[in-house]
Image (cartoon, rainbow, N blue to C red; front, side):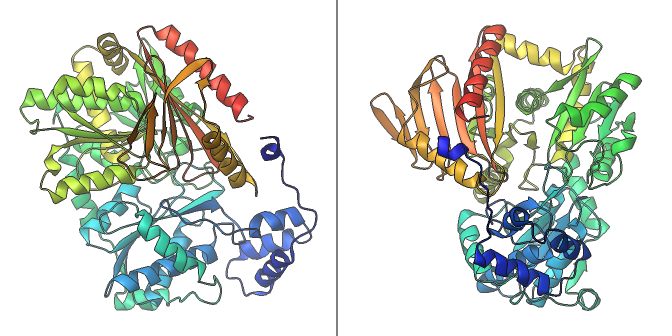
Length: 583
């Protein structure tokens, strides 16, 4: 472990990195920002090494990285290389493939979307392109609406401003499968990012219809599907609430405002400093609705205007965080708490309204609160667990649809503030979630309670649950090596106890094995680099590397009858994790 903690420092550049840097310097670069950056890092070996020692890794979440020059950065050349790999894959599998493209408000997003379009048409592939920034779920919808063979979304979700990303979707509207990733990755590796990328002329392609603009009618079709997910239509007019909304300078403004207005939620104010698209995110360097600092301006405005509810969507508008007024103060709720409240609200209302389907089903990820199981049992709702990543929820919806059972699906959610109701898209959707959270807030207000009151009532009924996650960053050229070594060490020497609590079961999702005492069973989920530890008393700890960032995440799922005892236990576990991971 001591070796893992040592920081990498490179005094002399390897010859292959020198050559690659010089190749970039000598190439005709079409981005003045890259030209300037390459000149500025001349003779700065560590800066050169960080940009060229590897290439961005393409996975189920596509590409994600810091904007800048080099093979280990997001730029038009790494985007072009990835798109060429995707184009090769599509042309190997389909005749005359179609691809939908969307992008958010981040720096270079529009340029990357345009460049990806040029590469696709240069390879004979037709493109449906949104003309302006759009929420992530609208990309999933467009893929399904146009029956495309793939989709591309240019976004880095909630990462800091220096990041951007490139997500690829399959024909089902979900992020692509592991099998597709492997094949596309092979194509990317054999593609030189300068010499092998074919680009068509953008203006010519639009004139002849090879790049087609996604029109307003498609947005309207999406909005109609969102509106179909209402549980208590008209409650916003019957019991008005005041809402503060912030898109965090991202892509959610137009769609979220529209669905709120259509549901009768007209007392809505937008945080002015965070209203308009701005990839610099000047008021929240980490535009993550899980983080209080990102919501602080919204909380301030909520207090000023005595709002009932604050909604905050992340830059690509697939996740939403909230705060609610309770006893005169704005209280933030976690993704797990909101998901449990949504399940209780949807299930109870549909049962009351007579719209509950036969054999209702909800889906959650393995790191999401087990409180769901207790609440679902009240209404006879089946709970399915899937691996971390919303694409697995989307895939399960697809399985239901194939059997003609998509009507069973009530709700899918993950602890990281992602929710979906309805089967019209296959990714988390902060537009429909914002609508239903507002509706739920108004409904509970009509009953004389806040969402905090409703949550406390559930705790009194099924027990107290606390779910939390700690993230530990491993930046730099050796970050991934450190993370891999930690996970390997945990497998070689399994933990017998955590923070003084005995481990009573262990699950390794990479080997698909769960061990409890002397008994072992097979985990019926796809293999994944996840370790789960069951503790005495029903609590658990999960350790996994992030799929999109150089981080190891530790998830705590804790339960007990006494709130304070559970909170104290969390502090013990969090302290253990910080010491164990060297933070």
